[in-house]
Image 1 (cartoon, one colour):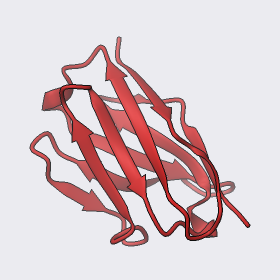
Image 2: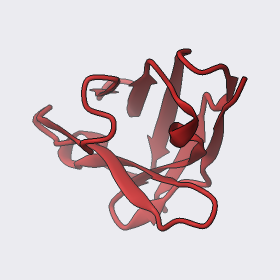
Image 3: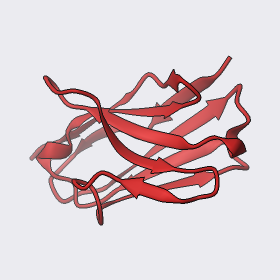
Image 4: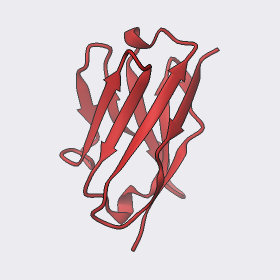
Length: 111
C-alpha cells in the first residue's frame, strides 16, 4: 500500500521560507514522477510542481523562480523549497504519486 506523508508546513511571514518534505513508502520511488499540489480555501486543487523520475522539473507560473522541487531517491523523499512566500501561497499542500495523495500539510503566510 502506497503511503505519502508530508511535513514541514507552518506559519510564516510574507517573504519567508519553508521546506516541505514528503516521504513515500510502499512504492518503487525512483521510477515515479512526484508532484506537489496545493488547495487554498474556496479554490480548486492546483498543481504546483512536478519532478520526473529522471529529475526534470516543471512549475506553475505563480511559483516559478520562488519554489524548487527536488528528490532524494535514497530517502524516498521529495522536497519543496518555498522562498519569498506571499499570502497567496497560503494553502494545504499535498504530495501526489502513483494515484495516491498524502494527507496534506498546512502552509499559512501571514504577518
